Length: 209
Ligand SMILES: N[C@@H](CCC(=O)N[C@@H](CS)C(=O)NCC(=O)O)C(=O)O
Image (cartoon, rainbow, N blue to C red):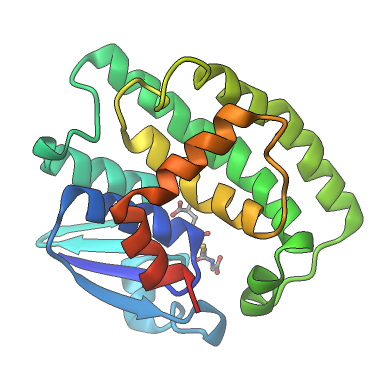
């Protein structure tokens, strides 16, 4: 299995987290996206948008971090990253769409103004209006996670892809100084997530200096 990931990439971290949780043996290929390493003809043949991450497993070529994670989870059922019931899987899908469509974009709107390491590496400069919009969106979305986590450690009871999905962009958010104390269950959940050995390995590989 070949895993193509971006240095300092949150979306790549999501898939690395799942690979490490599942204990998959893979060959990692680090790309420096701001230097154009994801826009080479070879890489564009794999991922036509030149985005990271991507995965090759034999004849299977995949992009989109949550699709990669679903594939890993299906291929390694022993890792227990998905519920076995149809309704449980649908609920996990619900969290993945919620993360990708709502929570991560709102986190990015804030991080572009607040996270100096993120800004420096990706060469982005936020603006006050976008940051404010992101904060307003997070004020709607974080309470949804808070309610789901009120009486459980993980979003669907057992640890799953649903939890994995949120770790990277919440991590960037907190690294930029965002205060999660108004949503204590989310704050403690993130602490549990980033304490997992699979995340520690991911952060050391992708996110740290
Ligand atoms: N929805 C995609 C997002 C992938 C994405 O936007 N990756 C960023 C890095 S975190 C990227 O490759 N950016 C470079 C670009 O858009 O050209 C996923 O979850 O895999």
